[in-house]
Image (cartoon, rainbow over all chains, first blue to last red; front, side, top):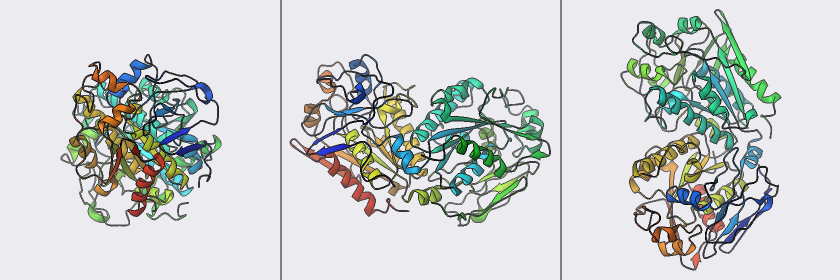
Length: 289
Length: 289
Protein backbone atom coordinates (compact mmCIF):
# COMPACT_ATOMS: atom_id res chain seq x y z
CA UNK A 1 0.00 0.00 0.00
CA UNK A 2 1.28 3.43 -0.75
CA UNK A 3 2.20 5.95 1.85
CA UNK A 4 -0.69 8.02 3.04
CA UNK A 5 1.38 11.10 2.47
CA UNK A 6 2.78 10.89 -1.03
CA UNK A 7 6.50 11.36 -1.49
CA UNK A 8 5.91 14.30 -3.80
CA UNK A 9 3.75 16.84 -2.06
CA UNK A 10 1.01 18.32 -4.21
CA UNK A 11 -1.44 20.91 -3.09
CA UNK A 12 -4.86 21.30 -4.52
CA UNK A 13 -6.72 24.38 -3.45
CA UNK A 14 -9.58 26.07 -5.19
CA UNK A 15 -9.18 25.84 -8.91
CA UNK A 16 -5.42 25.84 -8.62
CA UNK A 17 -3.05 22.99 -8.37
CA UNK A 18 0.67 23.09 -8.14
CA UNK A 19 3.02 20.26 -7.52
CA UNK A 20 6.75 20.17 -7.23
CA UNK A 21 9.21 17.47 -7.66
CA UNK A 22 11.06 16.74 -4.46
CA UNK A 23 14.27 15.51 -6.00
CA UNK A 24 16.47 17.35 -8.45
CA UNK A 25 16.03 16.44 -12.08
CA UNK A 26 18.29 13.76 -13.37
CA UNK A 27 18.36 15.11 -16.89
CA UNK A 28 17.38 18.77 -16.82
CA UNK A 29 15.96 20.42 -19.87
CA UNK A 30 13.60 23.28 -20.02
CA UNK A 31 11.41 24.98 -22.53
CA UNK A 32 9.41 28.14 -22.67
CA UNK A 33 5.70 28.50 -22.25
CA UNK A 34 3.87 30.63 -24.77
CA UNK A 35 1.85 33.43 -23.33
CA UNK A 36 3.11 33.13 -19.81
CA UNK A 37 6.08 33.63 -17.58
CA UNK A 38 8.61 30.89 -17.58
CA UNK A 39 9.40 29.57 -14.19
CA UNK A 40 11.96 26.97 -13.34
CA UNK A 41 10.84 24.27 -10.98
CA UNK A 42 13.02 22.14 -8.79
CA UNK A 43 15.69 20.86 -11.06
CA UNK A 44 15.04 23.64 -13.50
CA UNK A 45 12.66 21.66 -15.65
CA UNK A 46 9.55 23.12 -17.12
CA UNK A 47 7.37 22.11 -19.94
CA UNK A 48 4.40 23.54 -21.69
CA UNK A 49 1.73 21.05 -22.45
CA UNK A 50 -1.98 21.29 -22.75
CA UNK A 51 -4.19 18.27 -22.95
CA UNK A 52 -4.70 16.99 -26.44
CA UNK A 53 -3.34 14.84 -29.16
CA UNK A 54 -3.80 17.02 -32.14
CA UNK A 55 -2.37 20.40 -32.93
CA UNK A 56 -1.14 20.84 -29.39
CA UNK A 57 1.87 18.69 -30.00
CA UNK A 58 2.73 20.43 -33.23
CA UNK A 59 2.42 23.80 -31.68
CA UNK A 60 4.18 22.90 -28.50
CA UNK A 61 7.14 21.87 -30.59
CA UNK A 62 7.00 25.16 -32.44
CA UNK A 63 6.70 27.12 -29.23
CA UNK A 64 9.63 25.37 -27.66
CA UNK A 65 11.88 25.26 -30.62
CA UNK A 66 11.34 21.56 -31.15
CA UNK A 67 12.34 20.38 -27.71
CA UNK A 68 10.58 17.52 -26.04
CA UNK A 69 7.23 18.03 -24.45
CA UNK A 70 5.63 15.51 -22.26
CA UNK A 71 2.12 15.75 -21.09
CA UNK A 72 0.33 13.98 -18.33
CA UNK A 73 1.96 10.64 -18.06
CA UNK A 74 5.40 9.55 -17.19
CA UNK A 75 7.41 7.81 -19.84
CA UNK A 76 10.44 5.79 -18.88
CA UNK A 77 13.67 7.45 -19.79
CA UNK A 78 12.05 10.76 -20.52
CA UNK A 79 11.78 13.63 -18.13
CA UNK A 80 8.27 14.72 -17.56
CA UNK A 81 6.78 17.86 -16.26
CA UNK A 82 3.49 19.43 -17.04
CA UNK A 83 1.99 22.84 -16.80
CA UNK A 84 -1.73 23.16 -16.99
CA UNK A 85 -4.47 25.66 -16.51
CA UNK A 86 -7.32 25.21 -14.12
CA UNK A 87 -10.21 27.59 -13.83
CA UNK A 88 -9.13 31.06 -14.81
CA UNK A 89 -5.58 30.68 -13.65
CA UNK A 90 -3.03 30.53 -16.37
CA UNK A 91 0.31 28.86 -16.63
CA UNK A 92 0.17 26.88 -13.45
CA UNK A 93 3.35 24.89 -13.34
CA UNK A 94 2.95 21.23 -12.76
CA UNK A 95 6.21 19.45 -12.14
CA UNK A 96 6.09 15.77 -12.63
CA UNK A 97 3.02 15.67 -10.49
CA UNK A 98 1.43 12.53 -11.85
CA UNK A 99 2.24 9.44 -9.94
CA UNK A 100 5.40 8.26 -11.61
CA UNK A 101 7.29 5.05 -12.08
CA UNK A 102 8.87 5.19 -8.60
CA UNK A 103 5.46 5.36 -6.92
CA UNK A 104 4.06 2.57 -9.07
CA UNK A 105 7.07 0.41 -8.34
CA UNK A 106 6.59 1.04 -4.66
CA UNK A 107 2.99 -0.03 -4.95
CA UNK A 108 3.98 -3.20 -6.76
CA UNK A 109 7.17 -3.86 -4.81
CA UNK A 110 9.09 -4.55 -7.99
CA UNK A 111 10.93 -2.68 -10.72
CA UNK A 112 9.49 -2.26 -14.15
CA UNK A 113 11.47 -3.91 -16.91
CA UNK A 114 11.20 -5.72 -20.22
CA UNK A 115 12.08 -9.38 -20.58
CA UNK A 116 12.52 -9.79 -24.32
CA UNK A 117 12.38 -13.43 -25.41
CA UNK A 118 13.84 -14.09 -28.84
CA UNK A 119 14.33 -17.32 -30.74
CA UNK A 120 13.21 -19.37 -33.70
CA UNK A 121 9.64 -20.35 -34.30
CA UNK A 122 9.01 -23.41 -32.16
CA UNK A 123 11.82 -22.63 -29.74
CA UNK A 124 9.40 -22.30 -26.86
CA UNK A 125 9.12 -18.56 -26.39
CA UNK A 126 5.43 -18.60 -25.50
CA UNK A 127 5.98 -21.56 -23.23
CA UNK A 128 8.68 -19.69 -21.36
CA UNK A 129 6.59 -16.51 -21.28
CA UNK A 130 3.72 -18.41 -19.74
CA UNK A 131 5.85 -20.21 -17.19
CA UNK A 132 7.62 -17.01 -16.24
CA UNK A 133 4.36 -15.14 -15.81
CA UNK A 134 3.13 -17.92 -13.55
CA UNK A 135 6.29 -18.06 -11.48
CA UNK A 136 6.23 -14.31 -10.98
CA UNK A 137 2.58 -14.39 -10.04
CA UNK A 138 3.18 -17.11 -7.50
CA UNK A 139 5.65 -14.72 -5.86
CA UNK A 140 3.19 -11.86 -5.91
CA UNK A 141 4.64 -10.02 -8.90
CA UNK A 142 2.72 -8.42 -11.73
CA UNK A 143 3.81 -9.23 -15.25
CA UNK A 144 2.21 -8.91 -18.64
CA UNK A 145 2.95 -10.80 -21.83
CA UNK A 146 3.18 -9.01 -25.14
CA UNK A 147 3.07 -11.49 -27.92
CA UNK A 148 3.68 -10.74 -31.56
CA UNK A 149 0.74 -12.78 -32.77
CA UNK A 150 -1.57 -11.28 -30.18
CA UNK A 151 -0.74 -7.77 -31.08
CA UNK A 152 -1.33 -8.51 -34.73
CA UNK A 153 -4.97 -8.99 -33.78
CA UNK A 154 -5.17 -5.49 -32.40
CA UNK A 155 -2.55 -2.77 -32.32
CA UNK A 156 -0.63 -4.15 -35.27
CA UNK A 157 -3.49 -5.39 -37.35
CA UNK A 158 -2.67 -2.86 -40.02
CA UNK A 159 0.76 -4.34 -40.64
CA UNK A 160 1.62 -6.84 -43.34
CA UNK A 161 4.47 -9.32 -43.25
CA UNK A 162 6.63 -7.34 -45.60
CA UNK A 163 10.08 -6.43 -44.34
CA UNK A 164 9.20 -2.84 -43.51
CA UNK A 165 6.07 -3.82 -41.62
CA UNK A 166 7.88 -6.57 -39.75
CA UNK A 167 10.30 -3.97 -38.43
CA UNK A 168 7.41 -1.66 -37.55
CA UNK A 169 5.70 -4.52 -35.75
CA UNK A 170 8.73 -5.00 -33.54
CA UNK A 171 9.19 -1.28 -33.02
CA UNK A 172 5.63 -0.93 -31.77
CA UNK A 173 5.96 -3.90 -29.44
CA UNK A 174 9.12 -2.29 -28.09
CA UNK A 175 7.33 1.01 -27.54
CA UNK A 176 4.41 -0.65 -25.79
CA UNK A 177 6.78 -2.76 -23.69
CA UNK A 178 8.45 0.46 -22.62
CA UNK A 179 5.11 1.84 -21.46
CA UNK A 180 4.42 -1.30 -19.45
CA UNK A 181 7.85 -1.12 -17.84
CA UNK A 182 7.16 2.52 -17.03
CA UNK A 183 3.89 1.41 -15.47
CA UNK A 184 5.98 -0.75 -13.15
CA UNK A 185 5.21 -4.11 -14.67
CA UNK A 186 7.58 -6.87 -15.66
CA UNK A 187 6.73 -6.92 -19.33
CA UNK A 188 7.44 -10.18 -21.11
CA UNK A 189 7.77 -9.70 -24.85
CA UNK A 190 7.73 -12.88 -26.89
CA UNK A 191 8.72 -12.47 -30.52
CA UNK A 192 10.99 -14.24 -32.97
CA UNK A 193 12.52 -10.80 -33.61
CA UNK A 194 15.20 -12.32 -35.85
CA UNK A 195 17.24 -9.19 -36.56
CA UNK A 196 19.75 -7.71 -34.15
CA UNK A 197 19.02 -4.20 -35.30
CA UNK A 198 15.33 -4.47 -34.43
CA UNK A 199 16.08 -5.88 -31.01
CA UNK A 200 18.70 -3.29 -30.27
CA UNK A 201 16.25 -0.60 -31.36
CA UNK A 202 13.89 -1.82 -28.65
CA UNK A 203 16.70 -2.05 -26.13
CA UNK A 204 17.63 1.55 -26.82
CA UNK A 205 14.16 2.67 -25.75
CA UNK A 206 14.84 1.65 -22.18
CA UNK A 207 17.54 2.21 -19.68
CA UNK A 208 19.93 -0.54 -20.59
CA UNK A 209 19.61 -2.59 -17.43
CA UNK A 210 15.83 -2.64 -17.76
CA UNK A 211 15.96 -4.53 -21.05
CA UNK A 212 16.66 -8.18 -20.41
CA UNK A 213 17.18 -10.14 -23.59
CA UNK A 214 16.58 -13.86 -23.30
CA UNK A 215 17.77 -16.02 -26.17
CA UNK A 216 16.12 -19.38 -26.52
CA UNK A 217 19.02 -21.08 -28.20
CA UNK A 218 17.29 -24.07 -29.71
CA UNK A 219 18.81 -25.58 -32.84
CA UNK A 220 16.79 -25.33 -36.01
CA UNK A 221 16.56 -29.10 -36.26
CA UNK A 222 14.94 -29.30 -32.84
CA UNK A 223 12.44 -26.56 -33.70
CA UNK A 224 11.77 -28.20 -37.03
CA UNK A 225 11.25 -31.58 -35.42
CA UNK A 226 8.73 -30.00 -33.07
CA UNK A 227 7.03 -28.06 -35.87
CA UNK A 228 3.83 -27.73 -33.85
CA UNK A 229 1.84 -26.16 -36.62
CA UNK A 230 3.55 -27.71 -39.58
CA UNK A 231 5.01 -24.37 -40.56
CA UNK A 232 8.53 -25.67 -41.15
CA UNK A 233 7.11 -28.36 -43.40
CA UNK A 234 5.31 -25.73 -45.42
CA UNK A 235 8.41 -23.55 -45.51
CA UNK A 236 10.55 -26.44 -46.73
CA UNK A 237 7.96 -27.10 -49.40
CA UNK A 238 8.26 -23.49 -50.46
CA UNK A 239 4.69 -22.69 -49.47
CA UNK A 240 5.81 -20.07 -46.97
CA UNK A 241 8.40 -17.61 -48.14
CA UNK A 242 10.79 -15.75 -45.89
CA UNK A 243 10.41 -18.14 -42.98
CA UNK A 244 12.98 -17.49 -40.27
CA UNK A 245 15.59 -20.23 -40.18
CA UNK A 246 14.66 -21.62 -43.58
CA UNK A 247 14.94 -18.87 -46.15
CA UNK A 248 15.28 -15.88 -43.88
CA UNK A 249 18.09 -15.44 -41.37
CA UNK A 250 17.94 -15.50 -37.61
CA UNK A 251 20.64 -13.36 -36.09
CA UNK A 252 21.43 -14.70 -32.62
CA UNK A 253 22.16 -12.16 -29.90
CA UNK A 254 25.84 -11.58 -29.36
CA UNK A 255 25.64 -10.37 -25.78
CA UNK A 256 22.22 -10.93 -24.35
CA UNK A 257 21.53 -11.17 -20.64
CA UNK A 258 20.29 -14.75 -20.55
CA UNK A 259 20.80 -17.71 -22.88
CA UNK A 260 18.75 -20.85 -22.49
CA UNK A 261 20.21 -23.76 -24.40
CA UNK A 262 18.30 -26.71 -25.63
CA UNK A 263 19.65 -29.62 -27.58
CA UNK A 264 17.78 -32.55 -28.99
CA UNK A 265 16.54 -34.61 -26.09
CA UNK A 266 17.98 -32.24 -23.53
CA UNK A 267 15.67 -29.32 -23.04
CA UNK A 268 14.91 -27.60 -19.78
CA UNK A 269 11.42 -27.76 -18.39
CA UNK A 270 9.31 -24.61 -18.65
CA UNK A 271 9.64 -24.16 -14.91
CA UNK A 272 13.40 -24.45 -14.91
CA UNK A 273 13.63 -22.00 -17.80
CA UNK A 274 11.39 -19.61 -15.91
CA UNK A 275 13.41 -20.09 -12.73
CA UNK A 276 16.54 -19.04 -14.57
CA UNK A 277 14.90 -15.77 -15.58
CA UNK A 278 13.40 -15.25 -12.13
CA UNK A 279 16.84 -15.74 -10.57
CA UNK A 280 18.24 -13.09 -12.87
CA UNK A 281 15.45 -10.69 -11.95
CA UNK A 282 15.98 -11.39 -8.27
CA UNK A 283 19.74 -11.01 -8.39
CA UNK A 284 19.42 -7.75 -10.25
CA UNK A 285 16.94 -6.20 -7.88
CA UNK A 286 13.84 -6.24 -10.06
CA UNK A 287 11.74 -8.18 -7.59
CA UNK A 288 11.77 -5.49 -4.95
CA UNK A 289 11.10 -1.80 -4.94
CA UNK B 1 -0.61 -11.40 -2.59
CA UNK B 2 -1.75 -14.13 -4.87
CA UNK B 3 -2.93 -17.49 -3.74
CA UNK B 4 -0.15 -20.02 -3.28
CA UNK B 5 -2.19 -22.50 -5.23
CA UNK B 6 -3.26 -20.81 -8.41
CA UNK B 7 -6.90 -20.90 -9.35
CA UNK B 8 -6.10 -22.57 -12.64
CA UNK B 9 -4.11 -25.68 -11.98
CA UNK B 10 -1.15 -26.15 -14.28
CA UNK B 11 1.28 -29.00 -14.12
CA UNK B 12 4.81 -28.81 -15.27
CA UNK B 13 6.61 -32.12 -15.39
CA UNK B 14 9.64 -33.02 -17.43
CA UNK B 15 9.50 -31.30 -20.73
CA UNK B 16 5.72 -31.35 -20.77
CA UNK B 17 3.31 -28.79 -19.58
CA UNK B 18 -0.41 -28.91 -19.74
CA UNK B 19 -2.86 -26.54 -18.22
CA UNK B 20 -6.59 -26.45 -18.29
CA UNK B 21 -9.05 -23.74 -17.85
CA UNK B 22 -11.23 -24.26 -14.84
CA UNK B 23 -14.25 -22.34 -15.97
CA UNK B 24 -16.25 -22.84 -19.14
CA UNK B 25 -15.47 -20.52 -21.97
CA UNK B 26 -17.60 -17.43 -22.22
CA UNK B 27 -17.32 -17.20 -25.97
CA UNK B 28 -16.38 -20.58 -27.34
CA UNK B 29 -14.59 -20.89 -30.62
CA UNK B 30 -12.22 -23.53 -31.73
CA UNK B 31 -9.76 -24.12 -34.47
CA UNK B 32 -7.75 -26.99 -35.73
CA UNK B 33 -4.11 -27.68 -35.18
CA UNK B 34 -2.02 -28.63 -38.16
CA UNK B 35 -0.14 -31.85 -37.81
CA UNK B 36 -1.82 -32.96 -34.62
CA UNK B 37 -5.05 -34.21 -33.18
CA UNK B 38 -7.56 -31.56 -32.37
CA UNK B 39 -8.76 -31.75 -28.86
CA UNK B 40 -11.39 -29.61 -27.27
CA UNK B 41 -10.51 -28.19 -23.93
CA UNK B 42 -12.93 -27.13 -21.26
CA UNK B 43 -15.39 -24.95 -23.03
CA UNK B 44 -14.42 -26.44 -26.34
CA UNK B 45 -11.75 -23.90 -27.10
CA UNK B 46 -8.48 -24.76 -28.63
CA UNK B 47 -5.98 -22.80 -30.53
CA UNK B 48 -2.83 -23.50 -32.40
CA UNK B 49 -0.10 -21.03 -31.82
CA UNK B 50 3.64 -21.23 -31.87
CA UNK B 51 5.78 -18.44 -30.60
CA UNK B 52 6.59 -15.83 -33.16
CA UNK B 53 5.40 -12.77 -34.89
CA UNK B 54 6.17 -13.55 -38.44
CA UNK B 55 4.91 -16.31 -40.67
CA UNK B 56 3.33 -18.06 -37.74
CA UNK B 57 0.39 -15.76 -37.73
CA UNK B 58 -0.11 -16.01 -41.46
CA UNK B 59 0.05 -19.72 -41.36
CA UNK B 60 -2.05 -20.09 -38.27
CA UNK B 61 -4.75 -18.17 -40.03
CA UNK B 62 -4.43 -20.41 -43.05
CA UNK B 63 -4.52 -23.50 -40.91
CA UNK B 64 -7.58 -22.40 -39.06
CA UNK B 65 -9.48 -20.95 -41.93
CA UNK B 66 -8.90 -17.44 -40.74
CA UNK B 67 -10.28 -17.79 -37.26
CA UNK B 68 -8.73 -15.99 -34.37
CA UNK B 69 -5.55 -17.22 -32.82
CA UNK B 70 -4.18 -15.92 -29.61
CA UNK B 71 -0.78 -16.75 -28.38
CA UNK B 72 0.76 -16.40 -24.98
CA UNK B 73 -0.92 -13.46 -23.45
CA UNK B 74 -4.46 -12.77 -22.51
CA UNK B 75 -6.23 -10.02 -24.35
CA UNK B 76 -9.35 -8.48 -22.89
CA UNK B 77 -12.45 -9.38 -24.75
CA UNK B 78 -10.78 -12.16 -26.63
CA UNK B 79 -10.72 -15.77 -25.63
CA UNK B 80 -7.26 -17.12 -25.30
CA UNK B 81 -5.87 -20.57 -25.32
CA UNK B 82 -2.50 -21.74 -26.42
CA UNK B 83 -0.97 -24.95 -27.52
CA UNK B 84 2.77 -25.27 -27.53
CA UNK B 85 5.51 -27.80 -27.89
CA UNK B 86 8.12 -28.45 -25.27
CA UNK B 87 11.05 -30.79 -25.73
CA UNK B 88 10.13 -33.50 -28.16
CA UNK B 89 6.49 -33.58 -27.28
CA UNK B 90 4.17 -32.30 -29.92
CA UNK B 91 0.81 -30.63 -29.74
CA UNK B 92 0.68 -30.10 -26.04
CA UNK B 93 -2.52 -28.27 -25.38
CA UNK B 94 -2.20 -25.21 -23.30
CA UNK B 95 -5.50 -23.76 -22.28
CA UNK B 96 -5.37 -20.22 -21.16
CA UNK B 97 -2.53 -21.13 -18.90
CA UNK B 98 -0.82 -17.76 -18.64
CA UNK B 99 -1.83 -15.78 -15.67
CA UNK B 100 -4.87 -13.97 -16.95
CA UNK B 101 -6.77 -10.82 -16.20
CA UNK B 102 -8.63 -12.37 -13.24
CA UNK B 103 -5.38 -13.28 -11.51
CA UNK B 104 -3.84 -9.89 -12.16
CA UNK B 105 -6.96 -8.17 -10.86
CA UNK B 106 -6.78 -10.29 -7.75
CA UNK B 107 -3.17 -9.27 -7.24
CA UNK B 108 -4.08 -5.60 -7.64
CA UNK B 109 -7.42 -5.77 -5.87
CA UNK B 110 -9.09 -3.78 -8.63
CA UNK B 111 -10.66 -4.31 -12.02
CA UNK B 112 -8.92 -3.28 -15.20
CA UNK B 113 -10.70 -0.59 -17.16
CA UNK B 114 -10.18 2.43 -19.37
CA UNK B 115 -11.10 5.92 -18.22
CA UNK B 116 -11.23 7.85 -21.48
CA UNK B 117 -11.09 11.62 -20.91
CA UNK B 118 -12.27 13.68 -23.86
CA UNK B 119 -12.67 17.42 -24.28
CA UNK B 120 -11.34 20.48 -26.00
CA UNK B 121 -7.75 21.57 -25.82
CA UNK B 122 -7.37 23.44 -22.55
CA UNK B 123 -10.36 21.76 -20.93
CA UNK B 124 -8.18 20.22 -18.24
CA UNK B 125 -7.85 16.63 -19.37
CA UNK B 126 -4.25 16.24 -18.23
CA UNK B 127 -5.06 17.98 -14.98
CA UNK B 128 -7.87 15.54 -14.32
CA UNK B 129 -5.73 12.58 -15.40
CA UNK B 130 -3.01 13.62 -12.96
CA UNK B 131 -5.40 14.23 -10.10
CA UNK B 132 -7.18 10.94 -10.75
CA UNK B 133 -3.93 9.02 -10.85
CA UNK B 134 -2.94 10.59 -7.53
CA UNK B 135 -6.26 9.88 -5.88
CA UNK B 136 -6.17 6.28 -6.99
CA UNK B 137 -2.61 5.88 -5.80
CA UNK B 138 -3.48 7.30 -2.42
CA UNK B 139 -6.03 4.51 -2.14
CA UNK B 140 -3.51 1.87 -3.18
CA UNK B 141 -4.67 1.49 -6.77
CA UNK B 142 -2.49 1.19 -9.83
CA UNK B 143 -3.31 3.41 -12.78
CA UNK B 144 -1.42 4.50 -15.85
CA UNK B 145 -1.93 7.57 -17.98
CA UNK B 146 -1.85 7.35 -21.76
CA UNK B 147 -1.56 10.77 -23.22
CA UNK B 148 -1.85 11.61 -26.87
CA UNK B 149 1.14 13.92 -26.87
CA UNK B 150 3.27 11.45 -24.97
CA UNK B 151 2.58 8.65 -27.33
CA UNK B 152 3.47 10.84 -30.26
CA UNK B 153 6.99 10.80 -28.90
CA UNK B 154 7.15 7.04 -29.11
CA UNK B 155 4.59 4.58 -30.39
CA UNK B 156 2.90 7.10 -32.64
CA UNK B 157 5.89 9.06 -33.76
CA UNK B 158 5.34 7.88 -37.31
CA UNK B 159 1.95 9.54 -37.54
CA UNK B 160 1.27 12.94 -39.00
CA UNK B 161 -1.62 15.20 -38.13
CA UNK B 162 -3.55 14.42 -41.26
CA UNK B 163 -7.06 13.14 -40.79
CA UNK B 164 -6.18 9.52 -41.48
CA UNK B 165 -3.24 9.56 -39.10
CA UNK B 166 -5.26 11.31 -36.40
CA UNK B 167 -7.72 8.44 -36.50
CA UNK B 168 -4.88 5.93 -36.43
CA UNK B 169 -3.38 7.76 -33.45
CA UNK B 170 -6.59 7.30 -31.51
CA UNK B 171 -7.02 3.71 -32.65
CA UNK B 172 -3.56 2.82 -31.35
CA UNK B 173 -4.15 4.54 -28.03
CA UNK B 174 -7.38 2.56 -27.76
CA UNK B 175 -5.58 -0.69 -28.49
CA UNK B 176 -2.86 0.04 -25.95
CA UNK B 177 -5.44 1.12 -23.37
CA UNK B 178 -7.13 -2.23 -23.90
CA UNK B 179 -3.86 -4.02 -23.14
CA UNK B 180 -3.41 -2.02 -19.95
CA UNK B 181 -6.95 -2.81 -18.85
CA UNK B 182 -6.27 -6.45 -19.58
CA UNK B 183 -3.16 -6.15 -17.45
CA UNK B 184 -5.49 -5.13 -14.62
CA UNK B 185 -4.65 -1.44 -14.52
CA UNK B 186 -6.98 1.51 -14.45
CA UNK B 187 -5.82 3.06 -17.68
CA UNK B 188 -6.45 6.78 -17.98
CA UNK B 189 -6.46 7.91 -21.60
CA UNK B 190 -6.31 11.65 -22.09
CA UNK B 191 -6.98 12.80 -25.64
CA UNK B 192 -9.08 15.48 -27.29
CA UNK B 193 -10.49 12.66 -29.45
CA UNK B 194 -12.98 15.01 -31.07
CA UNK B 195 -14.91 12.50 -33.19
CA UNK B 196 -17.59 10.21 -31.84
CA UNK B 197 -16.69 7.48 -34.30
CA UNK B 198 -13.09 7.30 -33.09
CA UNK B 199 -14.14 7.16 -29.46
CA UNK B 200 -16.77 4.56 -30.10
CA UNK B 201 -14.18 2.53 -32.00
CA UNK B 202 -12.08 2.46 -28.85
CA UNK B 203 -15.10 1.66 -26.72
CA UNK B 204 -15.90 -1.30 -28.92
CA UNK B 205 -12.51 -2.84 -28.13
CA UNK B 206 -13.51 -3.38 -24.53
CA UNK B 207 -16.39 -4.89 -22.73
CA UNK B 208 -18.74 -1.99 -22.59
CA UNK B 209 -18.74 -1.45 -18.87
CA UNK B 210 -14.94 -1.32 -18.82
CA UNK B 211 -14.84 1.77 -21.01
CA UNK B 212 -15.66 4.82 -18.97
CA UNK B 213 -15.95 7.95 -21.06
CA UNK B 214 -15.45 11.19 -19.18
CA UNK B 215 -16.45 14.36 -20.99
CA UNK B 216 -14.84 17.54 -19.76
CA UNK B 217 -17.63 19.84 -20.81
CA UNK B 218 -15.85 23.16 -20.78
CA UNK B 219 -17.11 25.86 -23.11
CA UNK B 220 -14.84 26.91 -25.90
CA UNK B 221 -14.66 30.45 -24.53
CA UNK B 222 -13.33 29.18 -21.22
CA UNK B 223 -10.70 27.00 -22.92
CA UNK B 224 -9.81 29.87 -25.19
CA UNK B 225 -9.49 32.25 -22.26
CA UNK B 226 -7.13 29.80 -20.58
CA UNK B 227 -5.16 29.16 -23.79
CA UNK B 228 -2.14 27.98 -21.80
CA UNK B 229 0.11 27.64 -24.81
CA UNK B 230 -1.36 30.32 -27.00
CA UNK B 231 -2.68 27.73 -29.41
CA UNK B 232 -6.15 29.21 -29.69
CA UNK B 233 -4.59 32.55 -30.49
CA UNK B 234 -2.58 30.99 -33.25
CA UNK B 235 -5.60 29.09 -34.53
CA UNK B 236 -7.67 32.29 -34.60
CA UNK B 237 -4.89 33.94 -36.53
CA UNK B 238 -5.02 31.11 -39.03
CA UNK B 239 -1.55 29.89 -38.13
CA UNK B 240 -2.84 26.50 -37.07
CA UNK B 241 -5.28 24.80 -39.38
CA UNK B 242 -7.82 22.23 -38.33
CA UNK B 243 -7.74 23.18 -34.66
CA UNK B 244 -10.51 21.52 -32.70
CA UNK B 245 -13.17 24.00 -31.70
CA UNK B 246 -11.97 26.68 -34.13
CA UNK B 247 -12.00 25.26 -37.62
CA UNK B 248 -12.48 21.60 -36.86
CA UNK B 249 -15.48 20.21 -35.00
CA UNK B 250 -15.65 18.68 -31.56
CA UNK B 251 -18.44 16.15 -31.32
CA UNK B 252 -19.52 15.92 -27.69
CA UNK B 253 -20.43 12.49 -26.35
CA UNK B 254 -24.13 11.81 -26.42
CA UNK B 255 -24.22 9.22 -23.66
CA UNK B 256 -20.92 9.05 -21.85
CA UNK B 257 -20.55 7.71 -18.33
CA UNK B 258 -19.40 10.92 -16.65
CA UNK B 259 -19.78 14.58 -17.55
CA UNK B 260 -17.83 17.21 -15.72
CA UNK B 261 -19.19 20.68 -16.35
CA UNK B 262 -17.25 23.85 -16.07
CA UNK B 263 -18.48 27.33 -16.71
CA UNK B 264 -16.55 30.54 -16.61
CA UNK B 265 -15.61 31.17 -13.02
CA UNK B 266 -17.22 28.00 -11.82
CA UNK B 267 -14.90 25.08 -12.38
CA UNK B 268 -14.38 22.15 -10.09
CA UNK B 269 -11.00 21.66 -8.47
CA UNK B 270 -8.84 18.88 -9.86
CA UNK B 271 -9.46 16.91 -6.69
CA UNK B 272 -13.22 17.24 -6.90
CA UNK B 273 -13.13 16.22 -10.56
CA UNK B 274 -11.01 13.22 -9.67
CA UNK B 275 -13.30 12.37 -6.77
CA UNK B 276 -16.23 12.23 -9.14
CA UNK B 277 -14.46 9.66 -11.27
CA UNK B 278 -13.24 7.72 -8.25
CA UNK B 279 -16.81 7.58 -6.93
CA UNK B 280 -17.96 6.17 -10.23
CA UNK B 281 -15.22 3.55 -10.17
CA UNK B 282 -16.06 2.67 -6.60
CA UNK B 283 -19.79 2.43 -7.18
CA UNK B 284 -19.25 0.24 -10.19
CA UNK B 285 -16.95 -2.20 -8.48
CA UNK B 286 -13.68 -1.32 -10.19
CA UNK B 287 -11.83 -0.62 -6.96
CA UNK B 288 -12.03 -4.15 -5.71
CA UNK B 289 -11.29 -7.52 -7.18
